[in-house]
Image (tube, rainbow, N blue to C red; front, top):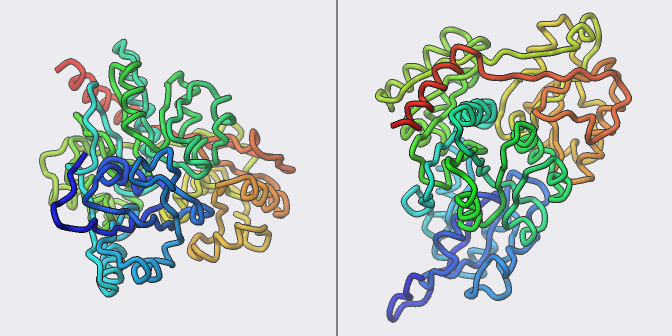
Length: 446
């Protein structure tokens, strides 16, 4: 425990977050730190997480009543009411300009603006750690992680994944989550976003940990793993200090790799950089990305990877009106204009991609209001039972003949769709897979 400074009152802090990095920074730096008093968390990006409390079971003995969570829009009120000294910015996948705007906003109110880095927030594991991070949401981390797990199993290694947090429900119950079977997804009342990240690894026989308290999660993972994979999210940097840092870059958003926070930091610290989706990128965009990598991290191993799609029932698409359902966060704060579903629609000759906006239900109306550039695609939003119901109703109200499901999970397991469906899968191309296999093998045997 850090000792309280003699003759000085505790600095009053607010942590600006989105139910992930914010809680981790608190746990590892502020929880037992008597130099600071964390007055509140603020929340943005994810719906329905404000107006909760970070519970006493997690906040520690300095906070017997827990810590309130407010909408970020309440920050001026919090600063004024509690005479805040410091605001800690603790969420990700935002432009560097956005971060500066938030800093100026905070500074104009009086407090210091703070970013926390690896030295203050990374946990040191007793097992080797391979981290898989990215420069933007939706770059292709999960397919990279899956391949790495496959290679480690081939080498006879017991591998466990520690996944970036997504605690959108009861934080006390979600402190430490261990996923081994698909039934665990129901037991922990997972959102669609959580299912998208966990289900594919569980199906391949890999145990996944996630939650809120990553010191406890790490200790449990160390007890059953020979190698730990950090599976990153939201282009955040790892909570665990990596021994091998692999970072995925998306050439469909050229320039983002050096203009987003903390994506550029990931790029600069990478040992291995996977440029994904090269088969979908324009040559000039790929060249831009390669030049940017050379400019900030010329010593990294660079692997160019295709991301081929697999559509077993692709013939159902030809000549028909299709509704394309893509990964939610990739379309919203990830700002992607298309994904694997659109690629499939074009490849198999869809007559028309149906615009979902005339058919939106409930909370999805708010989603399109908050992210007006989504266009004629339907983000797979499901941060709670009501939003999952709204997604189902929107799909079923549409005049599409076929629904293209381009999310990592099969939506038919969660909702009743009254139309034909086609599922799109995608994975890392063979040539890149072999290069990545060589990198992983060298790391394990060195």
